Length: 277
Image (cartoon, rainbow, N blue to C red; front, side):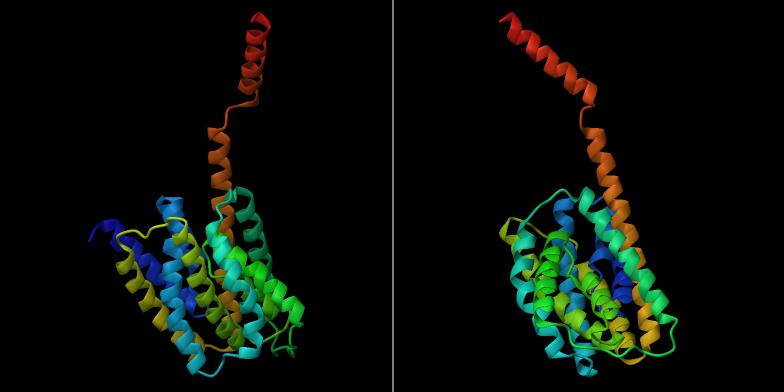
């Protein structure tokens, strides 16, 4: 085993533990680690989705067996998200604008969740309108496939901020949502020729270990306020990572594009050539 594979395995274990404790699988954290490590963008999406699937399976078993899963809350979000996650997995778009915007949304959600965790009582919850849940699920499914995440990083704060469920029910619904969307998104990416790196099995094992411990604590030990605060921390990490990555991509794009003066000079030279002819 190479040093790079071993170090990444340790980092993925840590990400899997932290994210799984709040019903997530860690995709945004895996993407941040791989981005900082300098891995190819083409490898990052399928790798994060594969790790997501492993951790989400474990989280699903833990939260469902603990009795926190609500099918009536889950299915309206999932029915539109699954096919659109497949479509999103097939799409490749410049992320330098998209990622900072999503990062800003996550940072705002983290702030709202942290403020909400300071309240002593859990708010009364209501059932989301069917059309709203269908539309939100489709949008989040497409975003999950596009970014290489399972969508739970967007769904959790939405459910909590709209008071559609408590923290544990939100975590349970989110982890199952992540599982189905990650499978669909990975299938879409593979259909377009995406491949997984050689170290994937080691990384899956490390992420699974972290997910096993984290999801157990989240489903059976942590209270609602603790889950809200952990989720807020996760969102801050993910939001900062997305903003940083987007800024880095924008700077790289700007450095690779020719300056406007060179473009004008080239156009003028071409016009002179045409005039001479």
